[in-house]
Amino acid sequence: MSLDIDYYELLECERTADDATLKASYRKLAMKYHPDRNPGCQDSEARFKAINEAYEVLKDPQKRAAYDRFGKSMPQGGFGGHADFGDIGDIFESIFGSAFGGGGRQQRGPARGADLRYDMEIRLEDAFSGCVREIQVDVAARCDACDGSGARPGTSTHRCTTCGGHGKVRAQQGFFMVERTCPHCQGSGEVITDPCDQCHGEGRVDRRKTLTVNVPAGVDEGTRIRLSGEGESGARGAAPGDLYIFLHIARHRLFEREGTTLFTRAPISFTTAALGGCITIPGLDGRKHDITIPAGIQSGKQLRQRGAGMPVLNGRGNGDLVIQIDVETPTKLNAKQKELLEAFRETETGDECPASQGFFGRIKEMWDDLTE
Ligand SMILES: [Zn+2]
Ligand SMILES: [Zn+2]
Image (cartoon, rainbow, N blue to C red; front, side, top):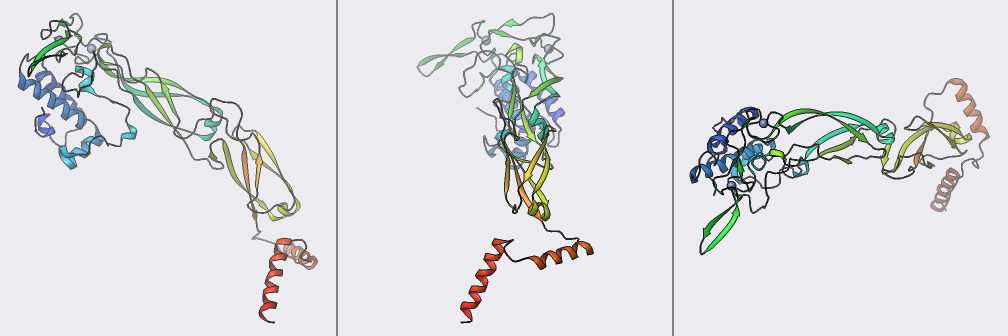
């Protein structure tokens, strides 16, 4: 039973209305048509449901954009759902419970607070060592004025007149008498007749909270950290939701990471490649790793430093550091160096570079075959 009226009309707002305007109008209208204020009035109840449906869509930027484009035929359930956790900010259920056309969802009392998502970027160094971060989040927190009850201070909730405080109502449905959760009080048996000024009967208000997040060593892109009970406060004393921290690892100038393995590419001079040597790679913890370059190393060769990679999340030990060697051919030789290399070339027999010798040997054989 849904009123087929444009959502903006239902909320008595322009299509260009901002979030605050929509919210204010929604609150005013929800109070006006609330079934508690209009006992037994079918029209009010239908209007109340429709207003909630409209606000549910328009308060969400993605759903609102979809509604603006497609109207009510907008795609259901697919609003970039990856970012959603359950019923984020489901005000309808939060304030008034889920009994009105709740799609058969059985729930007693006000809904648990919504889960929230917070995206946090950290450096690879922080993922390596673990870190502690303070974050500030704006969440709906328990209203101090009414202590979360939603009732104006000094007043109390009243016994629900619809169900007489039983929390259940009976209705004739065809030949049957069915019992269902009271739509008036959502089964609690009590209703707010005089809502709190501060929270408009919601039992919670938006508040900025500072939270400390402990990021353990070894976290990766997409690791989630759950702060239990730090999500939205539940309506009228219901349990709060959780806050999920989604971690993102910033790109590092030197290292790439795959699982617990750290990769880096190290260009070395052709003399070091030929003669062998040592290079020093800084670890993410500031430790230095001296890497021995064996004489005659080729480009593309990977050297592995065991245990110098990322730590295992919630485990023991570290992965490996893998260094890929790139031999760099010199491009800026001075006269002296050219002379020395020319002299070196004079001494070459071909045995110094077996791969080249083999290759040119095969070319020569091919020529000989062709000119036979
Ligand atoms: Zn309050
Ligand atoms: Zn009731």
